Amino acid sequence: MQIGHRQLYPGRETLNPMHEPFADESPTPPPIASAAAAPPPLPVLAMSYQATHGVTDEDKTLAALCHVLGIFTGFLGPLVIWLVKKDSSPFLDHHGREALNFQLTVLLVLMSLAAVTFVLMFIFVGIFLIPVIIVLQILAIVAEIMAAVAAANGEWHRYPFCIRLV
Image (cartoon, rainbow, N blue to C red; front, side):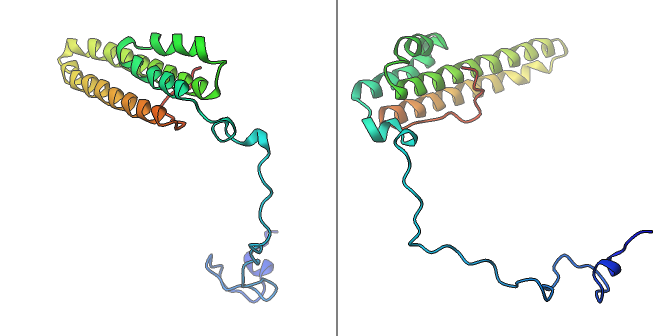
């Protein structure tokens, strides 16, 4: 025997998702906690490195250099700076990882697109993918410059659309 909505909700002919509340339902939402009950403060470990220690000018310069070197050396410049300085500051560790991950992502995408372009060249369609490769490279340079400016200002920047490999 199936139980229909008439047995579950006696006195209701149809079920409407926008129904009026039943007699036992409360038509008003629960009260919001008062403003006097502020959340507890964050523990010291949850605070950012920048808020507790500050970021030195040397950290900002090296972090910006990580991103700028990616334009000229690919993933090798950010890799060297990250391996040498990752233990000295969490700010440098973050920017070194971001620059390295972005360079590896760009390398993978461009190599894959170049392989597809090469294969499709034989049927004369791949020639149309060459401008796509050029535009992607220009967009990567713009993203690297934006990250370098953010690092020079002491901001914790993250690249969008980046595969986090390291």
